[in-house]
Length: 142
Image (cartoon, rainbow, N blue to C red; front, side, top):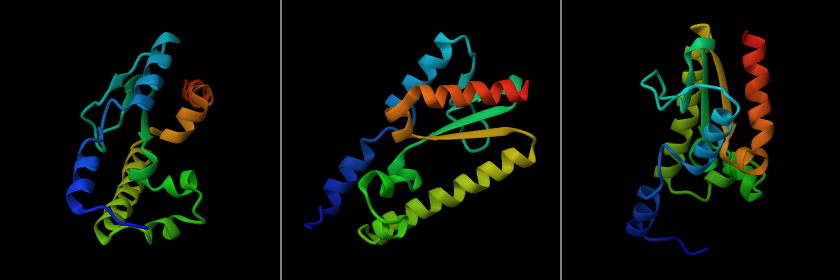
């Protein structure tokens, strides 16, 4: 497999949005239509995509590539198998994101909050299943 040059890779990666992605927008619009009010991109620890302070619930919508789920989407046997195809920089970046996600989860859980994380691919595949999970979680918190 031919590798891209660094300039091309940089151009592609820098064009990717870190907020208001299509899966986030679809998810938020559906919640809003169902009467579930939230705040988006709030300045809380770990920058949750959605926060519902009333229920102490934060929701993260994680991109498969950036947060370590892309191996499943691309059909690799494991995260490690996929990361072997990446440069050292991207391996370190993705591993760092995974570790940061764990610390963010631990922070919220230890502070009495509930954390939901949805993969971009899960929202794209079955948005309503993710919405139902969110509603069930809210009902459990109430």
